[in-house]
Length: 578
Image (cartoon, rainbow, N blue to C red; front, side, top):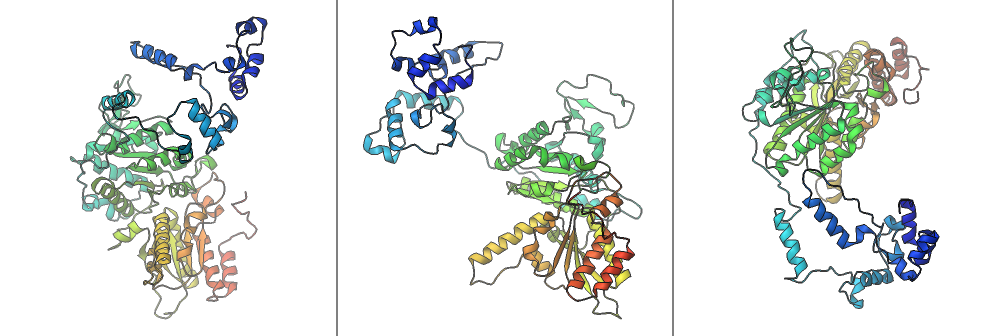
């Protein structure tokens, strides 16, 4: 038995008794053991994993053994019970159903109480009320705490702070004060942690490099959890924000262990159901190493109705410069959008971060919706404006008007375009609006689009409703509503692959041009990367002018002049192919 390998054991059960006699009992000494056995008796030799007496004995020994874990190795048969229809055969995984004769053999083999005339109906088998089997099963279930599956859908609601609590993020950062959206997230997190009502429910989880995300302030404030406390003197112990570990720490610092950190997050994100206590987990990672590395766990989180925040730091293919193709993320928002209950945003400004995060808290922990949020944040510092009045609702829908272009009095009918953007590239879009106005006399309305994903979901929902209600007044998507009273072609630019902005094409009933960062990442300055991927202000300007020329609003020579003026090489390699 120690000489035979698993593949041989499988083959033995796929053949017959004569084959087993010839190939298993393959020495004179072994053949002598079964010399007086029939082939049927040889075939009837059972595997330990299907011997109820051996299973009982092994389990009894394991339960009674104290002080050590016990491992039971049970040899079993692939497709056990399927007989000629698939037992011990490689095709058993492909068998979707058994024919009548195979079912009949299965019935006979296991002595099931089903009459021949019932076999085609495949009736459910039930133990008789009061039978030893049913009594035993019910007692075991009660000993385990009751019937499963059972899940708690709600837990005591948390009192969510008002948006005004985050007022500092809604205001302009101030002249000369540059911050990143990563810093905005950390600031939001700090405010939550200090909240006396919900602070203790917050679970910051970092799989790698807390300092990259500017989170070292939390080390001193709440500490890093270690069940054994700090067993060494950290090299930075004399610093204000030293690496502090403690048994009551709140930050889960998991080293380079994305799968483990994501498992932490799922445990906290489902605690409302498992333990009846709502926790607010923040999984903060490099965006390239989030969904791309733990997508299966993210999908499982959706399936388990997890609630919490996934924060994709150092996001954007051209924003995390100098890290090459391994680190530069241009597609995590595509992956997150595949999970139906994952709500994704790519904010540009602090006020977008505050509005989105606070709404996430309300939906998940007050209304107790089964959703979770993925928010990308960048490490580029710049000044942040104040939130436009009344923009909050549109920010959550995924598209809001930042600024409307103004025609000069001398040119009331100047050419006009609609410029869309998200993340840090929205700032290039804003700069392109200035170039269009100053260099070419073209007005541009500026639209922040923190969630092309939510815009697409809304548009698809509206399209479906319109299809199913053809005689009713047809509804408009949020994109259509925003653009209803505007004119000119639409140009969108993001720090992600074109597919990200392409999601809303069905809802833009005019010329639509998308710019994105398709291709492998590169290591260089942000300025050079954005030129390489053709998403900087010059490329946005040229794309807008070309769209106007295609509509006959301006001359094509104007586009050629712009290309020359901005020093764009017409023979430059396509970033999608190099």
